[in-house]
Image 1: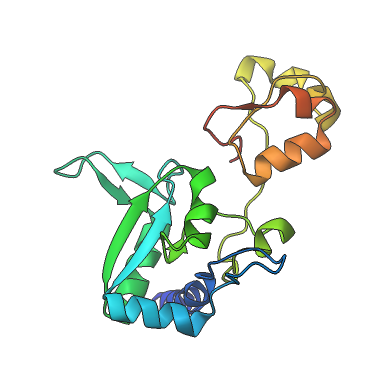
Image 2: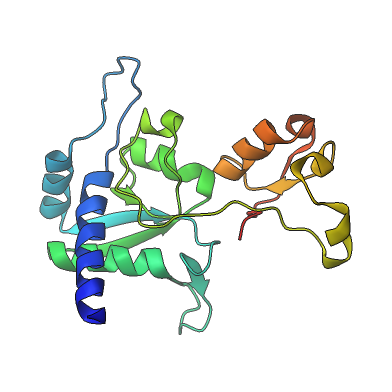
Amino acid sequence: MKKITKTILTAAVIAGMLMAGGCGGSSSGSSSPKTNGSALMQKIKSSGKLTVGTASGFPPYEFLDTSASDGKKIDGIDIKLAEAVAKKLGVKLEIQDMTFQSLLSSLTTGKVDIAVSAINPTEERKKTVDFSDSYLEGKQTLLVRKEDAGKYKTLSDFDGKRIGVQKSTIQEKLANEQIKKCADRCTSQGRRCTS
């Protein structure tokens, strides 16, 4: 049963990822509209490789495996999915590690074929890239020091406080929308405030 479930999940993810590689311009009539799935498949097949963009700072989904012989291997759940897609397509996998902020622009400029890095679909992002069906439900939370746990019981307790978020993420957007005075004080620390 476990093997069947894994096979079904892998097939669903592969199908979703193949549809996800939409690249291209904006919805404002740009000369480079989102790439359709068949054009992307043709590009991947003719080049013999699937180029995947990721931001390796989000274990267990993508991370730098320092135990690898060269100390530079990117690994994780999303990488395993990308490996399965490349294998199914019969092409080589090329991973490009970059900042999270660079992922979507790398898709729209064609630097990468697909991006895997816990990217939440938003209406704004959907204007320029296509998304696979979601394969991970995330919960957004705020982390505080253990000794400060009693000080923060509701979102309003964070009003005017300094919040660390990763730039260009759903967490930055939520902090700016839901915490008063956060838009002026949110800082980009290159880390995610989620669990």
